[in-house]
Image 1: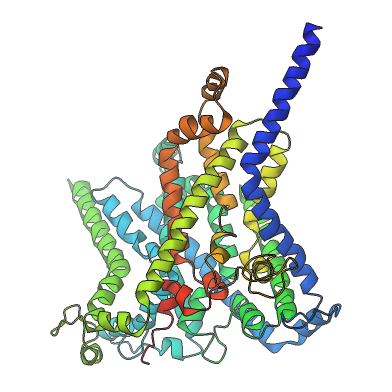
Image 2 (image 1 turned 90 degrees about the vertical axis):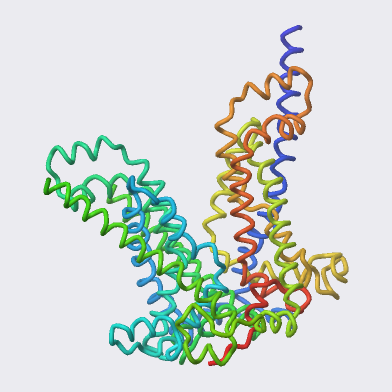
Amino acid sequence: MAKRGKNTGGKRIAQRMNVIGWTFTAPPVVLFLIFTFLPILMAVLISFTNYDIINAPKFVGLANYRKLLKDEFFWISLKNTCVYTLMYVPGGLILSLSAALFLNQNKKFVSVFRTLFYLPVLSSTVATATLWFWILNPQLGLLNGVLKLFGITGPAWLYDSKWAMIAVVMMSLWAGFGSNMMIFLAGLKGVPGTLYEVAKVEGATRWQTFRYVTWPSISKTTFLVSTMLLISSFQVFDQAFVLTKGGPGNATITLVYYIYNNGFNNLKMGYASSISIVLFLIILVFSILNSKLNKADI
Amino acid sequence: MKSKKMKKAKSVLWYIGAILISLATVYPFLWMVATSFKPEAEIYQNSLSLISSAFSWKNYRTVFETMPFGRYFLNSFILAASGVITNLFFGALAGYAFAKLKFSGRKVTFSILLTSMMIPSVATMIPQFLILKFFPLVGGNNILGQGGNGFINSYGAIIIPGAVGAFAVFFMKQFFETLPDELAEAARLDGCGELRIFTSIYFPLIRPAAVTLAIMTFQSGWNNFMWPMIVLNSEKNEDHSGGACHVPVPV
């Protein structure tokens, strides 16, 4: 009898716990359902319609996807996004890791330099882009001014379709390497010092120490950083929007920019949704590839 | 003796390198500040210099005179600050529940929330806009979500979808997990309610983590550009990032 009483009491407590737990976690769960889960379902559905906000949507089957394959601008923006990613991901990885390795030592003022290296991260993309708009100015800009000191005549950067994307990548690297550098610094702190001592005793060169001690030890950090770089670079928008508006001659129009143009400027929600689904799949494939690649390395 | 000399030379080289890199990250900011005080004519004459011969506040006056920049600034601040408050409170509450309360379905719910961090925001951007626009009974909408603008063009369009992100929950959970369970058990025996256990025992213990989250949330809210641009299109509601876009730049 007493045992039974205790049991139902336990059940009551467990039930109370459930109610409290669900109440405490309700806000993020409800927001997730309304603003992430529902939108994904909707995006898939809308991509099969010709929805334009004003008129009622009509089911058009795969028409949007078929149109996509023949859309010259889709391919241009896909190519531009890939070019950006191909430059930005390795560039960002190398730059932030080198900066972290450079700062990972016991010297005076290291923390001051760490702050100074991090400074660009604190500025918003729009402010940074406005600043770089001037830095890259062919006649008056800082960059061509510095190049002139070395006797080099700089290109027209944002006004030259050959150089515009490179300029956008340069700005993004400058603006973003600090945050990944911080993550790498945290990762480097986690490498056991004994490994370096062994490497020193064994007479390993600097490169060997990096290749066989540091690099394998920070593989988890590298994976984290490269995944974030990949996901963010496929979604590049702010920089291109503020710096070049996609120009010159569509040289910097990116996929997200094209989605924005179709969906919010031309109200072609159905078509824009189909592009974002394609982009979503591209990011998914690259994220999986990246995790496979990194697992093979561990 | 020789190796000591080499070490010193290496150290000097390191400092030279560090200063050069710092120059590359800091100089553009100084240059921006300097240029902002230059009269227009001088910008074209000696654009590289940091020192202006004719220091003037004119550019700043123009910014505030030609557009409601104070308003943009206030908007950015309100939006970023509300994001901090809601993310901190709801993020901590849910993070605490996932870390410390044993309720059924918590593992599944948490992993679903975590995967949502991997979904690129652009894929959900258009439906989110539609959901906000056709939200029932808000902004002139009827129960079917027709007739008005819903949350579009109001602070709600930014505050509500971003009220508590999976990142805030995940971040908070990591810190609550490091605290012992015994604190809650003891409080429960004393008859303390669950909400009080959270607010007066556990939450004060993770204050450093909360501050970090607050700074990160504020920074991302302050720098947010694309989403505010899409959902706020009246001048009154624009934030400073959007406002900066209106500045006509001479080419």
